[in-house]
Every structure is written in structure tokens, then in C-alpha cells.
Length: 427
Image (cartoon, rainbow, N blue to C red; front, side):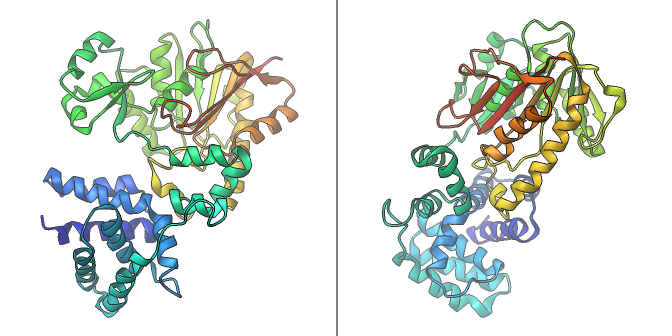
């Protein structure tokens, strides 16, 4: 496949994300299904995700080259050209020529001169150095995240921590764990020996090629943060607990919990039938006994009142703890969106409390790092529910705590940003 064909696919992909709010990973998989050559697939993936990851930074550059913001479809063309020039070692003349040709090919020939001029001037724009602009703007332009996010990070965690968090580069490898229902650590690692892999605290970082060589039921992809969260959910000494995972699709945490505690009766819920079907398929592949359940966490279900030893609320959130693996999370995300989703989180937590039996635990988690969705929600809940209190989490996987665990990639072995609170019902 010629480079112009691959760039056209990337252009269409990026328009799907920017204009139609398509999910990046799903859309990429859809397009790659028609691409057979591995080099072509790698090129398309790298360019597509590269533009997404550098989107805010590319906006910074474009803003300094034009007096008026171009239409999104034109911006996408310029960003493809800029990414070629700055991050793919494509000679400037070649990147400009190919982008101009792409502009004509997608029916935008009328602006090809404009695209040409912007790209030719782009070498004159340098990213700001530390101290030249505000801390907020410096972090935003350097690490390609919105200014509102860098400002909030600095306010809540301090400048130095914010810089470390944003600068951290996660492994390009995929994190997996073996399925103890069908194999053991020793046998599984024998199969890994001929491949490039490294161990984490609970699993392995592996290449894409290795995934294709393993028996599908012998492993699953699961982030290290997700696995640590499950250990935090599970108090020691429970026998045959009843577990309700209210926002459980696609089912990874429920399945892992049942694997750690085979005597548990685990119900994994989602509001959408097609997502319950995803849970069902996951359960079957992993040879698990988790029970897929159609249920809306936003509604009350009296039949569950006072029935559960563990209730898990892995609630919908802004997802800003995992944005480096899912860069499209940042698109169209505004600070006001956090206020909206916070109401949903609080509603789920208030419903979930009814299902916890006396002595049981209510577990709340998010994959974000902002206090509004984390500590603030827990403090508000405890203030209005005096029959719950924070329950210390004892596992060597996390530091000493009072029932709240916060994970960050720059301090926790490359973990996603994650938050877990465990609350025990005391009466």
C-alpha cells in the first residue's frame, strides 16, 4: 500500500473521531480489518494515534500560524502534515507535498495553497520553554493536554507532581495476566520465554505478536491498575461472599475477583443488553462462574437490599487517569463535564449503599485523578451516611492507607491513574 493510501485512511479515521466523536480504538479496528500488511497496519496506527496524542500541541502550533481557526476537516490535513514533519522524520518538502496532494484528493483542492503555506511556515514555531510562559500553558503545550486540565492538576497536586504525571510515558506493550483456571504461573511463563516480555507486580507486559501465539482462554488483557483495584475490593477472610458489581461491563474486574475468591457468587451488571452480552462472552472464554446481569445502577432494586458482602461501584468517570492509552478521551471534554458526571457517580453510590449488608463493604473506584470525582464524593457520602466508615485496605500492592488508595503511573510501576475507596457498613 502506498503512503498516500495510508494517509487517506488516517484522514478518514481522524475525521470520524473529531467530527463524529467515534471511539478511536473501535474505529481503528474497523479500518484495519481491511488492511492485511503488518507494515501498513503499523504505519496507520502510529500516525493515527500520534496525531491524537499530540492534538493539543498541534493546535498550539496552528494557532500561531493562522489568524482564524480552520474548519476541522482542514485542520486534520494540517495536523497530518505537521505530525509527519515533527514526529515521523519525514523531510519537510516531502511531507508538505504529500499533504497538499492529500488535500486535493479529499476534495479540498480549493484550500491546498493555504495548507501549503501553513506547513511551510510551521518550522518557525517552537514549543515554549519552561519559564517563558505560565506553568499552565507550558505543561499544556509540552505534554499536549488542555489548559483546564493542567491548571486543575497543578491546583490539586502541585506543579512538580503535575509535570511528572504528564511526562510519564507508559509502556507500549500490553499488560496481561494468566488465567489460573486453565494454567499456572510456571507453565504460562514457559510459553512466554521465546518472546519479548517483562513482569509487573501481577502480570506481564507483552508485545502484540505474543498475544496472537497464546491460547485465548489461558490469558486476558487487563491493566495493572484494574487488577490492583480488585485486590483492594476484596477483604481478607471472607467465605462464599455475595458480590454485586454494578457497572461491570465488560467484566474484567468481576472475573478476576471470582478467580481470586472462587467461593464468591459474583453478579456482574450493565444497563445495556449488548454490553451484558460482552460480559457473557468474556465469562465463557475465561471459564468463569460470574453471572452476567442486566441491571441499571441508576435505579433502585429492592430485591438486593441488605444482601451483599461486597458491592462494587466502578463508576462512569472522566477517564483522565487513562488518557495516554485512550487519547480521544480529551476531545470535547470540558471542566463542566465533570460536574455532570459527578451527579451520576453520587447517584450510583447512594443506590449501592442499600445493597450492602451490615459488616459488608461498599467499594467505589474511578480511572480518574481529580478530587471532584474521588475524595469529594467519598467525603460527601460519609457525611450523609453515618452507618458507613472508611475500611483500611491491607495488601502489599498498595501503601499504608485509611481505606483510600490512589494510583499514578509516575509512582506506581506505570499504573493507570486510578482511585479506590472501600467503605464498611458498621450498622
